[in-house]
Length: 110
Image (cartoon, rainbow, N blue to C red; front, side, top):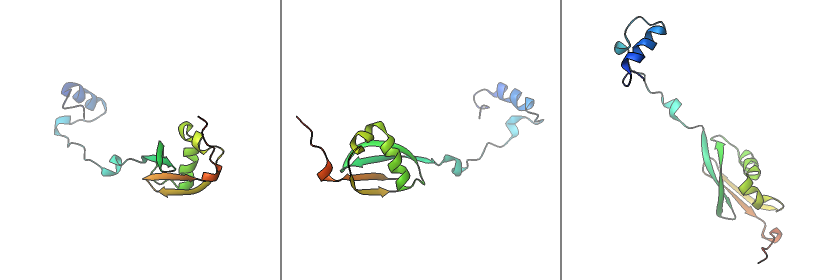
């Protein structure tokens, strides 16, 4: 990958690695699609239908793991601490939606 930009340096490094033929006659590396796939996704977290933040999770993350990460996040923890959860909606790799029980939500004092 260095040869098109610094051919002399690439040739020197190639010979120091123990190859006897010139680098110019070697085939260009092939692309492997397996290495190009992301293993993590940015998962938006909604609380009562409003997006309150995002968390970085593995693609194969379960609902419980995603909820644990969300409850540890600083921005999301203030919405989840001390309230009861009515329902959790999780679409793997897409979204985590937490519906809070309206009876136990404290009203903001203005």
